[in-house]
Amino acid sequence: LKIAERVKAQHPDIEARVTILGHIQRGGNPTAQDRITATRMGVAAINSLLAGKKNLMIGLKDRVIVEVSFNLVEKAFRPINKEFVDIQEVITRN
Image (cartoon, rainbow, N blue to C red; front, top):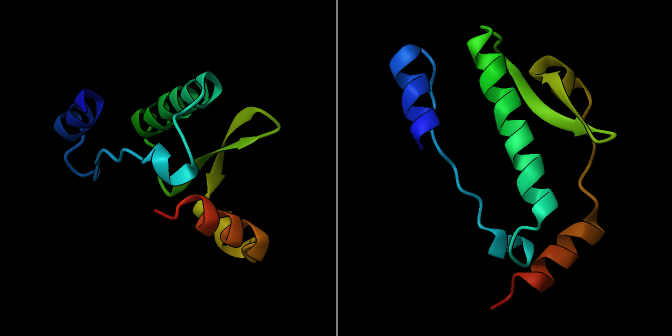
């Protein structure tokens, strides 16, 4: 929360908001690896913003944090695997 506030204060032209993903939706509490990866990606996102970079997302490729242009993402459409959707529906039922 504090990081978003700092970004907003230093860069009022950048929309910054905090999103806390519900790990319950994924089927349980985050693992240590989840927390490490999330921290690494968060740091990379902040560093990209502070470097003035725009129109990109932070991703993970072969365990390496990468910056990916939204232009590239738009061109690389991949359909959603129905099996994963079915599994998600099963694990999130109440």
